[in-house]
Image (cartoon, rainbow, N blue to C red; front, side, top):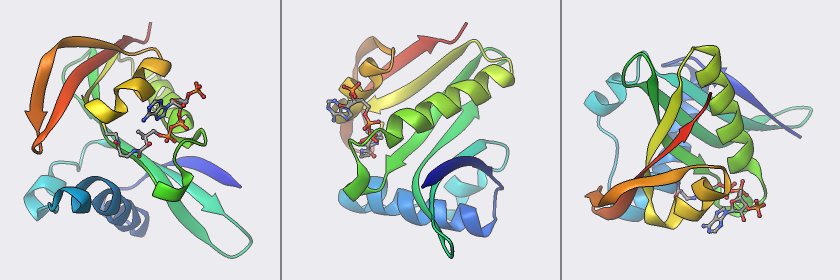
Length: 148
Ligand SMILES: CC(C)(COP(=O)(O)OP(=O)(O)OC[C@H]1O[C@@H](n2cnc3c(N)ncnc32)[C@H](O)[C@@H]1OP(=O)(O)O)[C@@H](O)C(=O)NCCC(=O)NCCS
């Protein structure tokens, strides 16, 4: 069983989220998070997907939403535990993020998508805007979807 929920900045859940992000998004690139980078997330929307049984609750996926202006919000740090990728969890997280963005009156959701993740976002209604660029040393594309 799994469920999605909002996380509190600095909580134990948040620490678990950082571990997952580090494992999936940073370590493979030989990078790590700095304290300063994480401090900027204090006002972001933090989303986690948790696998639950009678005793434990473990994070299996996550993303972060950072408002850009009154209408535009950016999805960042989207990650699903490696052994569970391609089983629909990413889509559930993205749909949850879209609902949260709508609740907070944002019109458009955007992201800097790694080129390897572009097909995933395309399957979920996002389109590429502009040219390829480098971020954390790998090719990315800006992608967007109009939420309403
Ligand atoms: C990218 C990622 C978040 C997607 O989550 P996921 O749980 O694996 O994706 P889902 O199983 O929900 O896939 C949803 C749809 O996208 C498709 N899809 C997912 N990843 C894909 C890929 N790499 N290439 C082509 N299609 C893909 C799935 O086939 C599925 O299509 P369907 O509509 O036919 O069922 C996850 O694979 C991941 O964490 N990857 C490593 C980190 C990363 O790249 N993060 C994104 C940074 S921008």
